[in-house]
Length: 597
Image (cartoon, rainbow, N blue to C red; front, top):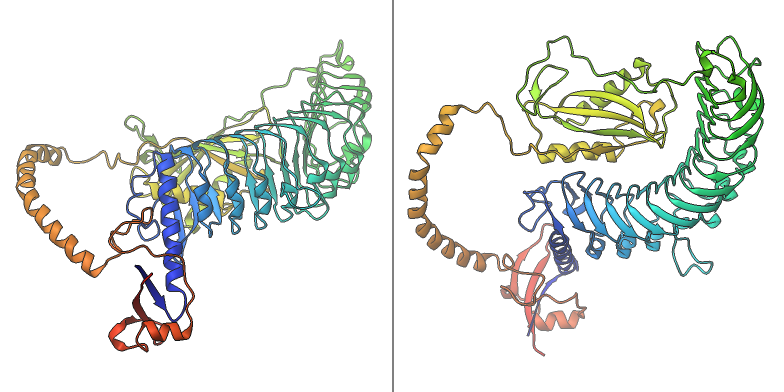
């Protein structure tokens, strides 16, 4: 005998069945994860406001859980969350493979698995995610080649992601040649970040077909051949990193790339003279070509861009240098390690100073407090446990980190964003600006809670959402970024200024409370049994376990189709005696009936 619940609007059964699938999927995901947030209890993540879960009309639309100590594997059950739009699991401890079923999440527009330990290959099925805006798989252990679609179209690949703007695959173990078919003129990509992998072969000239490109990171691979001359067609590009490869040939003509801010081709075996047109690019700020085989005379007497700040050509074979009056004032030239510096003591022949900053956010017209252990005095001079981490900017357009005026706009934009989004952030402190080996700009950040001395998990998740959803817009000179959070261990600390008398009183009264609890336990148990019995009568679905075929009610099968005559037959011509209520959209009656097999 099977039990069916029918609605004349044809929706109730399918909706209930769908909810069962989602609940089962979440249970399986929870079983595969450890250190889940404490409030992940019950069976309704939307109604219970689970930390890191956001919903719309009882459908899970985002999972945002950055640096919360999660561990485990991302199982194929994630595919059952069909309305998921954002999956943000940055800085967790996930390992294993990225499930191929992730390619069925057709609503997904942000997939960010940065800084985990995912291994093996990138699932080709990701190519089916036609709405994907951000694909960030950086800082994992992914290997093998980048998947592209087959000529027949039977196998998907990442070349199908024509609407995606961000390919972030840096710091993995991806290998083989970068497929030329990965890129096409129909793509909307603005970022191609493939640094620090194991790619070999030549740089595909098809990369220059992507006319919207702004940032290209191919450094730290084993790429060979020359820099494609077609790069001169990338009129929107502003950052080009090709360092630490095995390239050869002369520096390409980049005279039409008027938006270039940053050109870094260090340790790449390039040779020949420096083209004079390179210095005339109007937006160029940094030109770093150290550790190559460049030769000839470096003559900068002719005009060059007013934005230029740094030209680093140390450790080449440049025989002579004819400077301009701006050298050492507004422009820093570094030629140490060239024949041109033999016997010279000019500043441009000296070993350069470290390009880091001593800047730290100053107090806001107050005297910093002496705080207890692990607490920090905020810019507003309030002791608290800050949420800390590092803002990592992948493509800043400035090079002089010792210019402290560049940091104030960043602080202001951060606070403006937190105020506009009503997040519980009282103040922001930044410090320790420096460049890493990838030429990324690293800035330490401390976020201080508002109205209390610590953040709760909801606040931490909200901050992560602001950073991930690009709600926070840094000043344009900073470029694209991501936030790498440090573990936050103060969720349960509470206010450390609790009254000692209250604590003592609680300890003395503990025995009394325990005794009362034991006496009340038996009574509560009896009352609970009575309540459960009543609840089974009033709400038969409450004890329903969707993972089994047993439970408080018979198992609901998949939706069945019935003719009008069948409905009349099994409901006794829609008799009111069989009605169990009406819905909110006009007269929508429900009927329970039995089918005997």
